[in-house]
Length: 442
Image 1: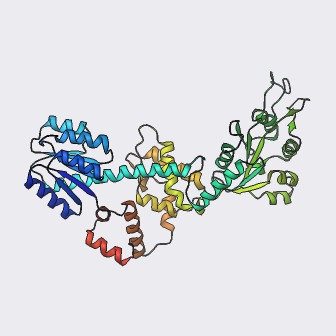
Image 2: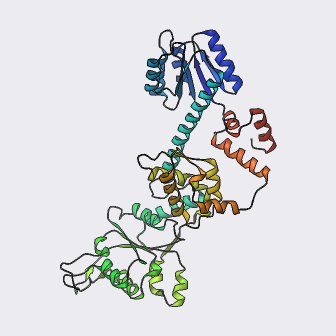
């Protein structure tokens, strides 16, 4: 879609000259003689950019600027005047003008300022769109994505939330299995109680015993007082066992008893403590294979595997990568970190990267870019070196494939604005039209 510019200039010749220059550059121009007419026109439709003279009869340019900033915050304003003073320039910039141009206008300067202003407008619109997409993708669950795979996963999570059965979540490392478990808890009747997570691969059998079941006073050297374990603390809620395949065999026996009897003994205790918990377990390995090897109890496997969910690897829902990047930028941006968008070349590289570490790897990549970046865009130089090397090893497409793909992405990023797309591509509109027809991109 062509950029829409509103020109407010009371001098007829100056107004006609501005209209001529901007129209020939490829913009859609509406030119009016007063700020009051401009306000009425702005009520009818939205403009990407307003160029206004400072000295106008009735409402002046500063008053119009204030009105636009208050009622049309995404619209950019450039102030033009033949009465150029430092005081006027400072006042216009303080009120939110993008730039301040003195008459007589220099066409190269005008075109440059208009181009920069429209780029700022496009960025503001993109940031707003990205935030809306993020909000839609997240919904009421801690799961981000709008692909068919993620939509189905969210549906399954909501359905399982209303059931009280044990759930086994299978998936590769970094796919967000704990987030799936949290989602089930959040939409369940147990949501008001605690969600407790324990990684079965980080504890020895002895430490796991104490962590899960707690201990009585003087149960071992240094136990000066009794201590609740995770099961007791989570009573009424949900306990998530991550990497359940690494749970020691003796602890598997104890966990099975809890699932069967709904009670347990603290370490060093003799009194059975009743417990009401929902168990969700996750693994990145094949539990059935571990059962066959004798490394995992078959009866515990069947107790846990009432319902199985699959946390998909990122390669199965690549279309969610842009949404995830936006989510991680919002999540991890700290004061002083300015990146709020992603360069198209960076996105192209990430869209073709295999992501062996899945969503967790993507999150780490975004955090690294925020820490290292100085500008507002996530550029390719902020990617880890191993990703750049992977990209160079990929099968090389033809020049025609690259051109078609790049034009398609630029058109999408420009929301169909062919003038803006042509400017980004560094070609004129006629050449762009020919390429659009050649590659059937209408």
